[in-house]
Image (cartoon, rainbow, N blue to C red):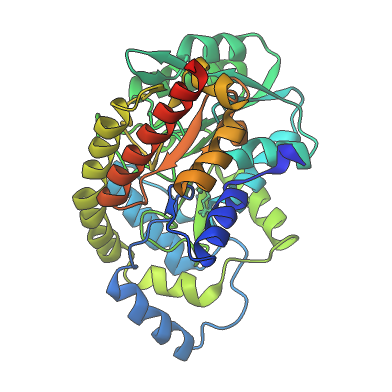
Length: 389
Ligand SMILES: Cc1ncc(COP(=O)(O)O)c(C=O)c1O
């Protein structure tokens, strides 16, 4: 079913082609190829031999929740009570718990478009009524329509707003001032704010905003990207005590807990591992972002919207090219088939930009990004020449 597609569908297609022996530049998935900090790898073995092999409490190990509170104090300067933290098997289950909480309130959920595909897929799976509001394109970047969000909140028709900053796939971010404006309106109208901030450490322009600084709503984060441990499945949410207790009880009745030995390993050296990983993020990702911004802005038939944060870009194909190939899904299919470059077509992340947008990931190396830009240029020039013949 089209509505339930995820990035994994396209990553698998790229992998299949590579397994056939074709050279493929895979710009699909947001999985950092970097290895986790060494202290974490050693801590896993220790955790298993120290007996962390049973269920943990559904809200997570106390030592991990205390370590997360210490990390957030350092990262965002906010004091968090560990009892307000619920550890989850990654950010997606934290999102699921937040969604189920939103479902208990009357009114619709507001999702911004483009969106991380799991937002709309989860809303559909859980029978949550939602509406989307497009981000705007202005001055060569995507911008949040803060006025539009506030006016939706003020309309009284929404139970919750789901924010994602830094944004996947739009590569943009909210300022704290904008976040504050949204939260103030939400407080007045008793609308729940959920904020997914898994890319908070991937910022290349300006300061990232955080819902945690506003002391309101449900803040979601995870260590998948920030510690290069996508497969460990350790994420968390932070909310008021009542919400955290409800979330823990939903957890107890669904997945029980996040993997205990991995929680113990992260808890043991969290702040140290975080510093090591962030140092690498800052060495690698700003350079990849600026290379992507530069290389893609020279591709004919592509409008590159500058990546300011996060792990992705979401450029727009111009209408002539999109029409020449019969839509962006066909464009992505042929680009992979003919040039060996894998991107994800816009409909996975968007309604508003579905017929022009495509997502590219910064998890590729600088050489791959440069080569992908060259091959896409070649492909677009061939398409344009074909059309003009
Ligand atoms: C915006 C966003 N939120 C959440 C997730 C899921 O994170 P996790 O792997 O911690 O479940 C992703 C993963 O790609 C993401 O892009």
